[in-house]
Image 1 (spheres, rainbow, N blue to C red):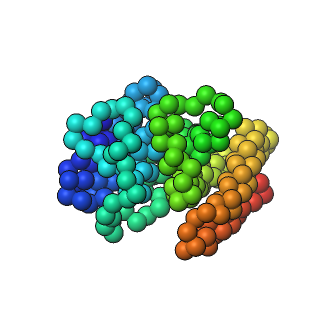
Image 2: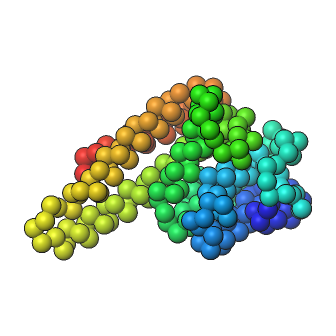
Length: 231
């Protein structure tokens, strides 16, 4: 409801980019006060709303209820301006809202990317996410989610590298900067990158104009995965 209220005025003016900026500002402000309570601030649900808004697939209105949005409020898209063109905009908002919890932000995007397939297998999923299942299986939105997931993983890798460099400066002959938990974390994230690279290449139904982008995104995941594995 807070996101909808923040974006509604810009929606009324037909400015999708302003609506996205306003909703992201609201999420970044509220998140640190409510996180990690999943009841008060469900990270995956918030991330999905912001991604749908940025993609022009959600038109929040004044007075919109806080639970699921009726299907008629969605459309095939609406007028976008040229303001929010940075693919990392929403992902950075999610990180700010969770106080740079890479684990929480990654888990949110991983849930969004897995929701459709888990539902088909009969695995219980958040009903708030299932309400938007038809969007979550849209190749264009999945491509967008993968781009955001890449941003989160890159930030996580940077943090691990910074911690390792810091630890190395103060290492007193222990197990080394990449020992223990950090080494396991990097190995696990390298596997995640490999899985996401495969997911990007499976998006065969994206428009022809986006097929090159999907392949390029897969390559970026592979580069990051190698960096994580080789450190």
